[in-house]
Image (cartoon, rainbow, N blue to C red; front, side, top):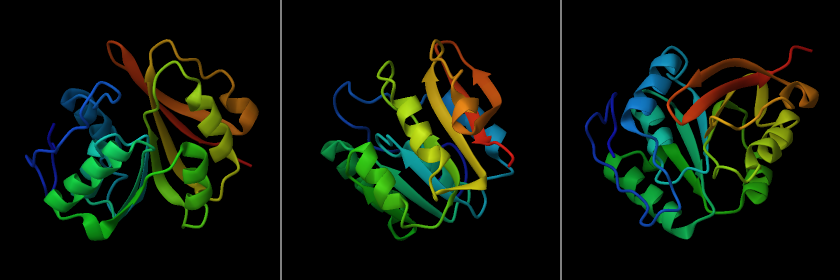
Length: 185
């Protein structure tokens, strides 16, 4: 795995040992950041279920101001910290090694994020749980973009019921990115 573009282009990143994480493929990561290219610079970025931290580090490399990485796996948190040190982004980042509920409580003490990315384990229903928590959370402003990486068969028909709206879906072979914002009030 590597950083695709920006100030740390071509830096290689460690991955979490085992099969519990699925690093986003370079081609999919590149498509995602092509979509986000005008929104990244100067942002506050939250990477939930961060794995090795590849998405948040890519955001920092492309000019994000600050990133928070959250993963409940101790090995993942250690790999993220190693990758941040390797890329020189330690001062621009915070790593949280807690479960998702504790993470969301902790991040509520921080300023709102411009972009929130999450790639939860597939088929566990965590997308809905996290989106419901984010819908009324102070970490989400009216301008926050939430991106969910999910299996193609994951349903998001509940999003409007919880005060959010889908603004774009980008499908790939086996998964998709769902772009979500708060509904206008």
